[in-house]
Length: 197
Image 1 (cartoon, one colour):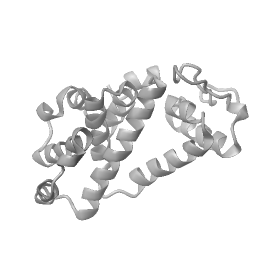
Image 2 (cartoon, rainbow, N blue to C red):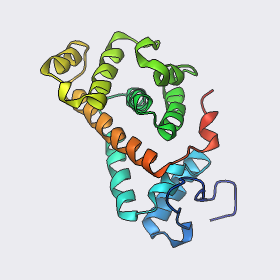
Image 3 (cartoon, rainbow, N blue to C red):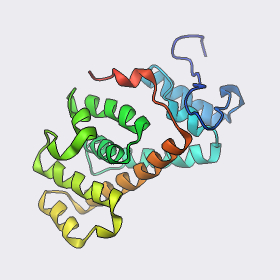
Image 4 (cartoon, rainbow, N blue to C red):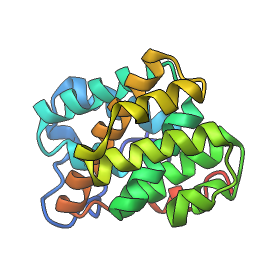
């Protein structure tokens, strides 16, 4: 690979509480995935640098992530809305910033991510999306309070059974991701702050 601006470089500042491994010391499959993401984004997102700390977990984490976004009954914009609303109530700095950028891009809306992080209930979204986020946030904050009526509200809002499953799966995965990012003190790349503005 050439020495260009898009060569993978694992950010030493990707997380504060654990060491970031050297790119050249990583298994080949991790190097290939990081190279691909770096080429696509134009920089190496710090989540790849941080998760490379434990290669077996990197593989499992990104395999599930890929399944969530590639085999979904939800639009990508909806997935990212869930991520940002959940990360907002969890106060996850990394995901608020990184996925906030993705909301701006997929929703083609420079304001929506900030609204979702601050208070999704007052964001400029339709009733179906508000219902979707109500359930995601309930599952995040008080999972024992999710009731059959919540699923029925999602059906009435127009979500299919598969989409309802996906709402829960995305919510659950990003609660895991938020907690791991916060525990490791992952830091978002500077580039994320300006994407989609």
